[in-house]
Image (cartoon, rainbow, N blue to C red; front, side):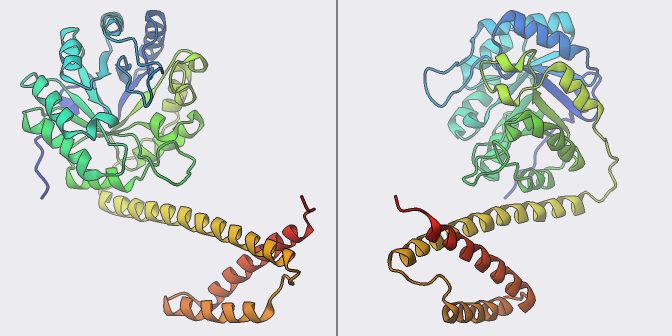
Length: 364
């Protein structure tokens, strides 16, 4: 059963806001100079209203840079005072919440690693209590809509209404061009269930590569997501964390200037359903390619066996029988004979080519 969320539209609490909501800033606050230089660069971009920076960094293994800690909050205070930008920081426990609010942080965000822990989310919700502060909630690492919704509901239940979901992609066992697979069907389903809940997309963590970011932002906006949170650093190549996915303020301004903001057509349901189906095709294609690659590995093993035992590559009787069996199976599943035959012949041709390569290899 889906709980009804009581959400305040972000247009009501974000000064001078307009679609889309743009949040920008470095993955990590590293030095006061780096933070301020980046902030001044971002403040010159009129679309950006919120400055982000991580000061407590949850890392997979100890020894990596885990953030500058509390002193970074003083730098964010300066950003707020000198640029007029609102500031947001990630919190992972009640102490973080208290220190951030004591330093006048405007918006809190809960990261993917924290969202997976209902106890941690509940503690954060209770630590915020009745203080009317906006909270951004990133999706969990794994593709689990229920966990994401549960975190949002816990915050809403303690009276927090200024909530924004952040889609940052999901860990996925198959290789894709992305650091974290977008799996657009999940935020689309969240939007369908809670149309009043703003969803901001984090293209930096989805892509892991700045070259993919512009197209990902455009796709997010085309799907009627409500904004983006993009990692921006004055000198990405020198960043202590996630240097490949950060952009400079100048690059950010260029990306934003090229975005096409489309009008809502009233056919959101159609767009969501199409994207859900296309996302399913993407996953199936990845599985199909993986299966074909594994099939060719087996073919090469067969080639080695034939070479050792001096067996011919082409086994015509086996091929004809396989072809007949697969065509019959495909027809039963609604596929045309012509399609199955073309597919089988392409796969067989590649298999023969690989076995010939095996036969021609010099002995070790």
